[in-house]
Amino acid sequence: MTRRSRAHHTVHKRRVVWPWIVGIVAVLAAIVAAAGICGMKLVKQAEQVKDHETQALTLLSGLSTNVNGSASLDDLNKDIPKIQQETQAANTIAHGSLWNFAAKIPFIGTDISTVQGMTEVVHNLASKSIPEFVDVLNSLKNADLSNSDGINLQPVVEVQPKLSSANKSLQEQVKAYDSLKNRILNRSSLLIPKEKIS
Image (cartoon, rainbow, N blue to C red; front, side, top):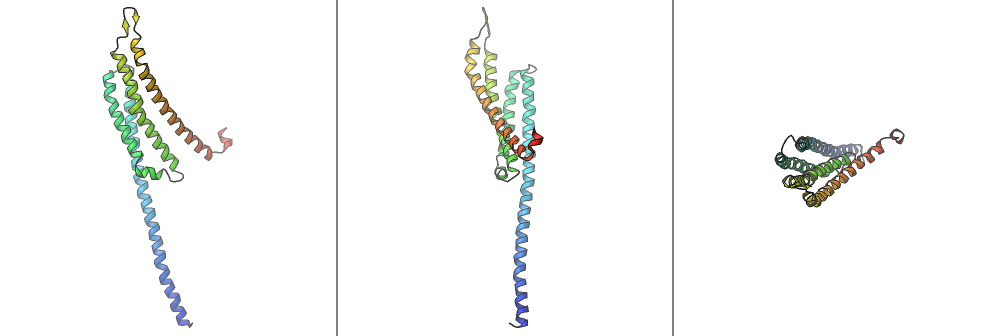
């Protein structure tokens, strides 16, 4: 091979290599840009979840005021659909395709799936457990608990199956929440040295 053909061959190699390098850099830049956009969207949705859950908790704190007697049971019945609407919205956002994908990403996936689990527990409480307890309260409110002999326990006995069902629903949600808490604690124990835990 002559010197000129070697030089031509080397120049030709450089021309072939540069498009590959530019192509790889462009693909990596596109991946980073897509990850950034998805990350920003995830943060925005996390804020929306927080807002819905905060609104639901505000309404729930109103329930405790209602139960203590400052407002009627009718007001309590009016607030439950609003609470369910807020928790449903948070649960829907937290179980969207972006969140399901992010739950599989190392390091942040556990946190994402924990938030998903928490929104599900809160929604189940709002849509199942709380309405069952309110149904018991409504039944007892409309019952005549006094009679000529003193206290009429028949209405209490009649709502006992409803109360058992409500309690079972509540215990299921407590168990689901505790499993989330244990997942967080197990993950934390991996990050904190055992000497500092004890």
